[in-house]
Length: 131
Image (cartoon, rainbow, N blue to C red; front, side):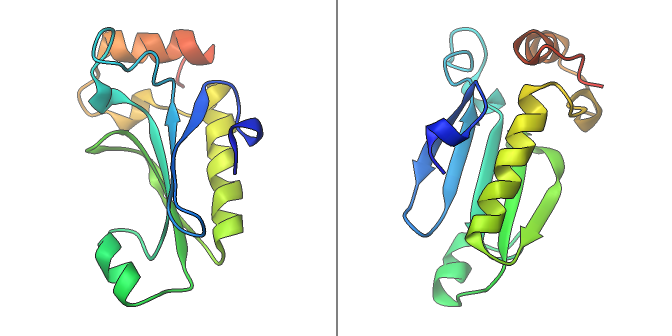
């Protein structure tokens, strides 16, 4: 997947050919000046089942690919999704990126303790209300 395939605001942060891909949302905003970089919404496409260490996937290849979406390191936007191929996982990540960019995902519901300024900024950026 390339930048052209992504909705506005998303960028390919890291891409290992045939391996892991990381997508980031608006790194220009989550830049340590306006908001902490830990708040950078991030989509991960990687081999292996969810919660499986990356090194284990390299040692014991798997046919499963996963997509994980985090608003922060400990705040999962949606439960991890698994796919049979990397291509399917990349498409699943793009669909989640589209939903997020349109404001169709309930990012406020992902928080037990809301971060109002941060969530208000996501509302502004996505044009949604996070609900």
